[in-house]
Structure formats: structure tokens, C-alpha cells
Length: 124
Length: 124
DNA sequence: TTGTTTGTATTAAGCACTTAATACAATAAT
DNA sequence: ATTATTGTATTAAGTGCTTAATACAAACAA
Image (cartoon, rainbow over all chains, first blue to last red; front, top):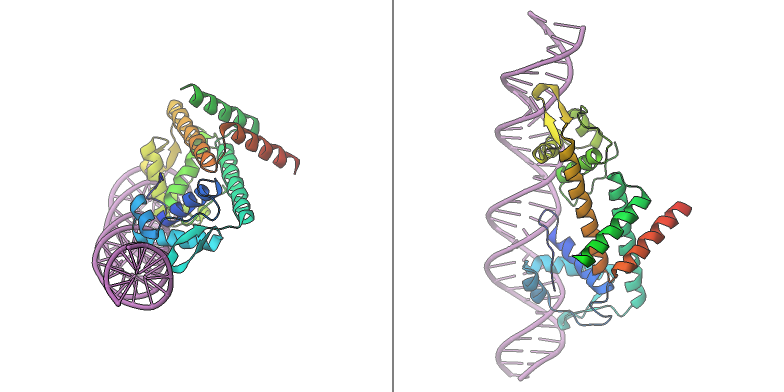
């Protein structure tokens, strides 16, 4: 998978967020076996310890379960996945609105800007 | 002013971004004298060194000018302010679209979610 | 002239994050 | 039975961020 890592922000936290989005976004299915910590770490280009911490975070969120020596898998609890997904969406939307308003945009203007951005990317 | 500080991310960088948004969003006008580093630091509840670094960042961006012992002020260069504002907007929109797509939303769905969020906040 | 305010610089300490290098027990695979 | 893989833990080192405590020169205010 593609990782986007910004080093002015804890990497384990970014890994956790991106993996969480991958799971709740449906790119990993419920119950699906995940690559090992070492594989994931190599893929992301980070230390296994860092990836381990990200996985522990996902586990404490209830998105992932650990089967000791048989690796990890996405939880079977689809309700939990949906619940976290809603939380993620709300967070992203709230942050976006907040920041756009700080830049001086009204709600209506924000809609307009977003519509422009989308149609531009579709054309270009 | 109101500061939103998240301690899992460099504070000087957050201060810089929020001040930049305040300036380009028009809450500080072009040419307007700014509070001193010490005042700003006390207001934000951070160390003066941390605020100093944020101000240096704004200066290197060309948003702020320093008059040695007479404090700092917003630049008179309105073109520069507009230019940075456009950069900020594009960044926020791009990040938002990227993250929402990672959560499995199509472009149309993103517009819908945003519209819902806005009307909900207006009602409640 | 004296005291205050300005930006700026320095040093030291503490803290979290990251990496590297290992190591271990439990289980799966052969 | 042996080997490989799994999650997990530990220790040490380096780095950047933050704070505290100062200090200085320049300019303004009294």
C-alpha cells in the first residue's frame, strides 16, 4: 500500500491513522489477515518498533485483533468498524470546516471552493 | 486570539500556521502592528522561544516584517498575502479530498457529506 | 538620563520519537 | 523434530521540540 509520512508528526500515529482509514474504507475487509509487523514495516520504510506501536494503537481501538503467533487480522466486528468510520469522517469534516473558516470562508463559499476543486481535477 | 494546540505536533509549526491563517483570512490587516513575541507567547501559553520560532517562520514566508526594536507587523504586500492564502486553501482542500477518498468516498459523496454537515450545524 | 520594551541569542535540562540490534516464547510449516 | 514466522520486549543512541533562565543591543518613553 501507499504510505504518506510526514516526519514533523509522530510516524506511529500517521501509520495508525492510515491503516485505520484503509480498514474502515474497505480496502481491508473484516476478518482479513494482515501482513506481519515486519512486512508492514519494510513496506512503509520504518522500523518494526514503530509499526508495532501503530498496530498496538489499532488494537486498542478495536479495529484489529491479534492471534499471538498467527499474526493479526481485521476485527470481525463490523459495527465497530462502522462506528470508527463515522468518527473519522466527522473529524475530517470538522477540521476542514474549521480551517476553511479560519481562512475567512463562509459555509456557502466552502461548498463552492470544493465543487471547483473537484470539477477542476476531473477536467485536468 | 484563540489558539488550538495539539502537543503531538510541533507547537511552533501550529502557531505559525494559525497566525498565517489569521493574516491571510483578514483578521490581521496588511501593515498592522503585531503584539510582541512575549505577549503572543503569554497569550498562547507557550515559551517565548517557541513563539519566536513561529514568527521567524512567518517572516521567511514573507507574511510578516520585523522592525528590529519596534516590533513586527503584517507585510504591506497584499499580493504576497493573497498568494499564500491561495496556497493554504489548495492545501486544505487537497488534504480533505485525499483523506475522504481514503475513507472510501467518491467525489460526489464528499460533496453530499459536506452539505449534510453544514446544514446540520446550522440547525443544531 | 534612566528605565522599559523590542527582537534576538545562548545554554542546559527534560521529554518523546525513531532507529538499531537483539532476544524470547509460542505457533505454524516443513 | 526442525525450521521459520509470529508478536513482543529491551537497551542504547541520536534527534528534535519545549521550556527555563538568562543576557545583549537598539530604540522608545518618561
